[in-house]
Image (cartoon, rainbow, N blue to C red; front, side, top):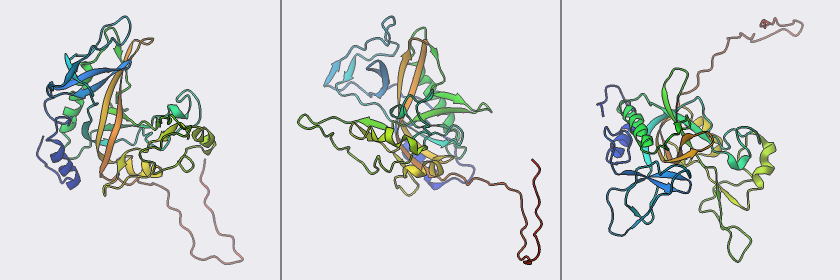
Length: 313
């Protein structure tokens, strides 16, 4: 980590110092060898296993596809209840490709989203360009590339589902949020179990198009709404209606999990992230509004028509 050469936010410095002690911080110069890809369903999830605990069970990871062997590095002993590792980074949330809103900009069923249940709000992140974490972002990208290369289905290409670049070829990667979670039904009741936390209701959840309210309400008895776990500089949960103004362009500490699956039809490896936690460290810069100055008279006579200047179009 480079020493600060320009004034930096105390929030950024404190977060950096705190995360440096964690092996899951992607800004470390070297990647820990304790990360492993574990088979989960038809895909894989990244876990952190420092050493084999005494009470472990042997698992055999099935192949990603019927014709291919398991693409990931395997460990003979896996904890009986493995948990996806939460990777951490300090980044800038880009203004471009920002869809981390209350409904991901959902317009209705179409080519992007089949239905509202399919919506996964997302954003891209890049170098925060603030010391002392500017140089750390280089390590973050390298470590993420190393992790994804450890889980590749033979014969499959790597798509652009996770890594991407803007029009100026600036390296970025994508973060996603799961908006809905299915709830279990009680065995003796037709009413679903209450969600652990429900600060926002289906009736008042902000939507890009109010016409989609009925589609959202249809999920009320079977799913929970999951607000983005994003907190402002003061530590307060950000309201869904304020995601864009509080997150777009902000420097933030992010925690996320990493998963992999293969698309057999396209023979492509797909990597995805799921946001665990976002903490804003530096507020987004204000948008600069440029407009033509237009002088208005402070007083006009009642019998005079004020002059107007028309803009040519």
